[in-house]
Figure 1: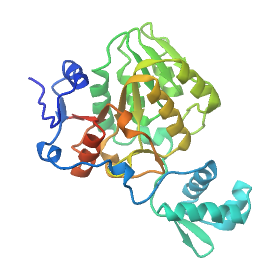
Figure 2: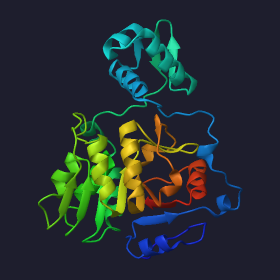
Figure 3: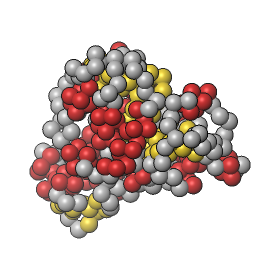
Length: 304
């Protein structure tokens, strides 16, 4: 069986090379009608900015998530060890961007925009993540170099790479390191720093320093949401900062997300979107997301 290609834009050199390796279960997708329409960079024209602008805002969002979505301002101030005015100021900023709503004496999350633990995420959309992992690993050859982040979909990619040999792996994920170290003559470089308890990820200056010093062929990144206006989005500011470093040091940048994340939003935008080369998903994206991909010259790969 041959690969069905329906790319609406010029068949890029990168896509050509990938098409020689992707199995018949993977479809490269486009839309001729969309390509004829005037395109704009949707993430630049967004009506609201959903990014957290400082660590305090992220702490407030996580505290709200732990509290079930609603919490009193006084409780937030006490839990975070800051003044009431500090909480109110940050809540005002979050409310302006449509992330929270102020209620009498308290704050309410407008939607569930924070992630559960890695273990919980590993148990969700299992079939889709396994399908995506298989598609991604088929473009990675023995001896290739690759960065893998701490996402749950990326964890499935790591599992699917277990039969590959002589890999040069850079990661900030304990899960990835455990799966690929001491196997098939792989070399695994684990970023340093304190490990987060909920996902076993390392962040901060030490982690970024290692990733800056190691250039890889592929960077495989998970995201929490894919939004037509804002592009690829994450739930965590630390993850976004580290992902930007990984993007700068990779030749081919890949984002992987199952269909459940399409059309969703998260607090932090992964910028710039036009640095991403390939987007792997298991579901045909809606038209507005396809436009965003085309505007940023990102090749779409749908694992069928």
